[in-house]
Length: 234
Image (cartoon, rainbow, N blue to C red; front, side):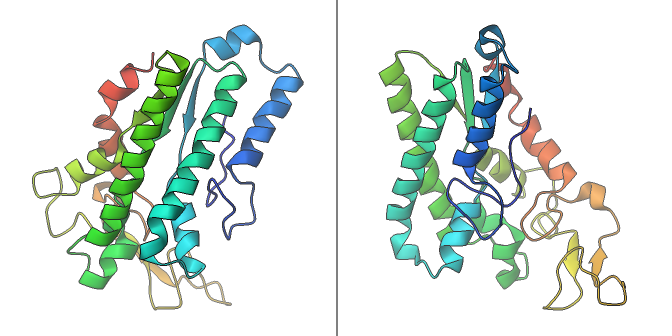
């Protein structure tokens, strides 16, 4: 069962859709309707994904890089409360993703013609992940059990977004689908229905689909690096 909404976050974003707390409300509503038994929950694994929309919203609301540590602390605190709430319903195991290298998303690398990652944003990702790991360790110690696990998307992405990975250095940071001009983005059409974007010749080889989303090949490579972590959940 999937309760996620695209473009949302732990807190409210600019997308008019339920944040994580409300998504968990939907899960709780199903439980109150007896959609799942206690045995179902005890044999279940919940995957909680925080992809970076909270940070995008923070910047769009004129947040500064200097204020990111305090914002990250509040974000992790709310995320922790959400994880505990899910476990409180009876879910046996909960996996939460670390933040991918935000500085390597095409929206960040466009300023260097898709040749270099933004170290400042990657540092923000690493700080987030450090705080998340510390909180997960604290929560597991508090519960006296390894209920919570992290899936290290940051390391998995970085292992692919480098010359030592599976992609050529000249192409691994480039998006496949881009707008034809500054006012357009992937998927846009004009008032006459004409496409205002272009798609690369071999999308099956791209790591990134558009300016912020990995392509199917990208996710395939990343999750192939996470197989051992996924097996630990069972």
